Amino acid sequence: MIDTIFPIRQFKHLTTPFYYYDLEVLRATIDAVKQQVDGKPFRVHYALKANANPKLLKIIKDKGFGADCVSGGEVQAALDAGITADKIVFAGVGKADWEINLGIDQGKFFVSMWNPCRSWKSSMNLLPQKTKQPK
Image (cartoon, rainbow, N blue to C red; front, side, top):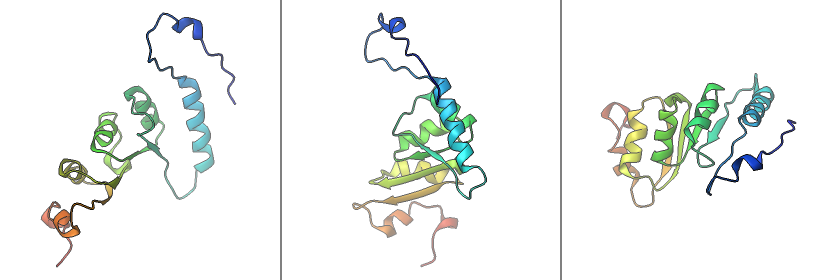
């Protein structure tokens, strides 16, 4: 465990909300997780719903983690941070057409969705012809 002292006096002049990130703790935590999963047959994906700060996402990407996204905005934030499409999982309910298309347009991408307002057949019509299932 890393011992840190929160530098509260340095932040008294700042207005709220203010977010303080101890990047040393973040890196140490990621390294500890990587050590536990090294050699195992799975990947770690960071859930962007927790925090999509671009600087944090770059650190997470540089450490080799993927992204777990539930909205098109989160997918775009992951892509903007340099996380490649093959390391992005996009899941959840109620996706708008633009979100589905964003996932499809990325190519190597895992998309899992369920939209009670859209039938499976109409969702399949959004897919490029070469990826559609046979009738």
